[in-house]
Image (cartoon, rainbow, N blue to C red; front, side):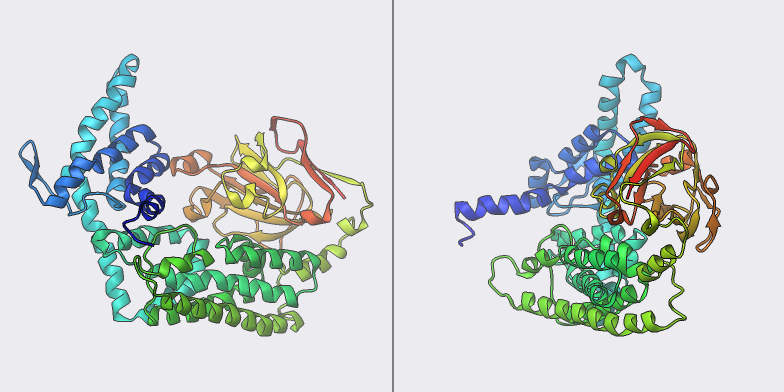
Amino acid sequence: MSTTSGTYQILFAAADGFFTFLPLALAYTAAIKFKTSQFISVAIGFAMVYPAITAVAAKGTALTFLGIPVILSPSGYASSVIPIILTVWVQSKVEPVFKKIVPSSLSMIFVPFLTLLLMVPLAFVVIGPIGTVIGNALGSLYNTIYNLSPVIAGAIMGGFWQVFVMFGMHWGFVPVMMQNLTPAGGGVDSMTPMLLPAVLAQGGAALAVFFRTHNKKTKELSMSSAVTSIFGVTEPAVYGVNLPLKIPFVSACIAGAVGGGFIAFMGVKNYVFGGLVSIFSFSAFIKTGTNNITPVIIAIIGSVIAIVLAFVLTMILFNKSVSDDTNKEEKVSSDVEEQKTDDVNNGSNDMKDGEKIILGSPLTGDVINLDQVQDPVFSSQAMGKGIAVEPQVGKLVSPMDGEITVAFKTGHAVGISGNNGVDLLMHVGIDTVELDGKGFEILVHQGDQVKAGQTLINFDIDKIKKEGYLTTVPIVVTNSDQFTDISGLDQDDVTIGEDFLTITK
């Protein structure tokens, strides 16, 4: 299709329009993160990508503000990343000052006015240039490392990408990917292609678990999570299958390193910023205006290598771990968990159809539906059915007698296998793993026997909120498939120990 045709230009506008005005979207999301006015942030973003300013930048015409020279790159701030994020952060410090100074009756008019009056010139004269330098430095640093040894860079990123995801560190690389694709970054990104094998390898490992495990629940979860991994959603595979079983996760990381190193060595590049790294990423490896599909073929080969290697390693090593008695003590292994549950009195297999279990609340707070939780892993019920609580007291207790199966050192989540056959995962806050234990006190360890009402985690609600995180606590029955109905009682709030969740065999 001709790049000058109306059809091409309209379709390309859909592809490139958002990226061209990326600072507007970043202004909005950064304002939410930094808890400042989204509309003021977006207004600043509009000013930074204002066509007249962009045109001046493109012409290289000198621009001053009150005699102070304004430094602009040839593309202005279109498609930029770091400058608007830094600007909104500064806005989040300035705006509250104006709110204190301006009388409340006049704040609607004068707080936005004064904030814009200060922040827009500040963005152009100081913050923007600093952000541009930082962004260019990040891009140059990455490209220097990549150019020294693409294979090593690809192996490291491919091998550790899912580890970065687990700790939330992957978000730090997103601005680098975006920066690489800006005109200042050369419009080419080499990072995204080397991450693709790491994502798809998790699906390959999960698929191997499907063939190796004899546990019905694990079999179903491993097959479904293998499929979702292909489309870039690896949470079910990582948290539901591979990471708890350890060997599949390590196998996938090794395979991701091999595939990432191969793709980097072959020089595959990315030319379009998209969403999740998935099979939909392949077309982004074709340079705009060409029909060269060689990079796509190379990327497919590298991805297949990773999937097959993850599958084979898991088939070999996980098989050994299943037959090795010394490794059967892994309590998070689904096969072992099921056997342990069978040996517990009052287990779910001893329940009669239609029999109900009523759990007491582990928290004091407001009850909300799971689908309202601002985390798709929980709201989609991929981890299981359940309910959520917006806590009013920073104390999480066990809702039943049982054994601790998961106890994160960071204190943000705990899993318990009840003597009643119910497996629960309770996650304090959204993305709070990123706090690395700040504001949390975990009182139990994996393997501990606990009683209903025993305190498991103490947490500081104010400190978590101050760090910018939601404190919503999803409470999920991870073996939901063993029950016919899981539903909360009709109530808006609960106190610790009060009946709030009914589970029917």
